[in-house]
Image 1 (cartoon, helix red, strand yellow):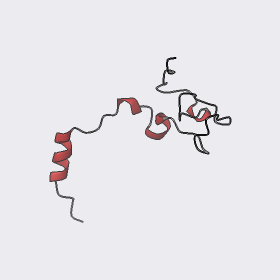
Image 2 (cartoon, rainbow, N blue to C red):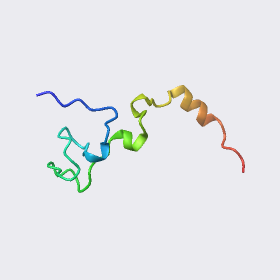
Image 3 (cartoon, rainbow, N blue to C red):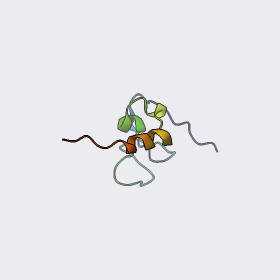
Length: 71
């Protein structure tokens, strides 16, 4: 059995629990995955969540070499 395709930006993500492959309705969760539904990444990080990439190691090293601003 193939897992369900994960939607990038569903129309109403608040209606579904995204915690497992069942995608249960928020008011009828079957798996017992906690007492609250798991939010869709678009709810947490915005509609462009799938395009986000972590900074490269070079960018991270450059940022850590810079001292914090003095206040």
